[in-house]
Image (cartoon, rainbow, N blue to C red; front, top):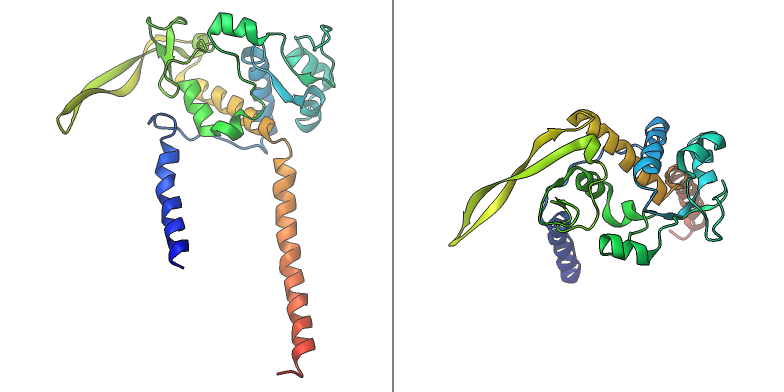
Length: 252
């Protein structure tokens, strides 16, 4: 029992560590609803417009998106299929979502290989992705001209700057013990983008929602099946208990 208590306390103490795993940055709650197909369709369009040129989603197929999100295949072709497959021919509706960019080219252009986004939402979490895309700011010391609060010194350029606009960090001096350091207070807008703050957050919500769906397309069916399994177990327990009582009534 003592060992179980220790393990439980260790798990509780680990939660704050996980919450600050993004380098101490506050994570905003992403508006995720994978049952909202309109949001997922908008997110798929955003992914095709701003992400898919560089980032692959090699565990996902175009026709799976068309089926799950109830999008005509012609619209999926127009929305997403603007790359070539591994054979160098134009991608087909049944192909995996790979990109033409090679790791060597990405390392020369960005200093690192571009990550596949198939499982990004499972690996990082929806709140991390949502906050990360909100948290770019102008930094003239970086090769791309931008930095990120959630991912310091990130190699990715701020591809959504025209939508969000430009931000700069605002710091204030903080004394902790005998140590004084600058703490980030806010990101201040210095140039408006095409979208308002609310519109941009909604745009990111749709994009993040699509990435959550893409990381596990079967999750809606899995959750539905889970409730059915639990209901079956509850009913089965009733029959099993009644049978046990019948078998053991003479023993007691």
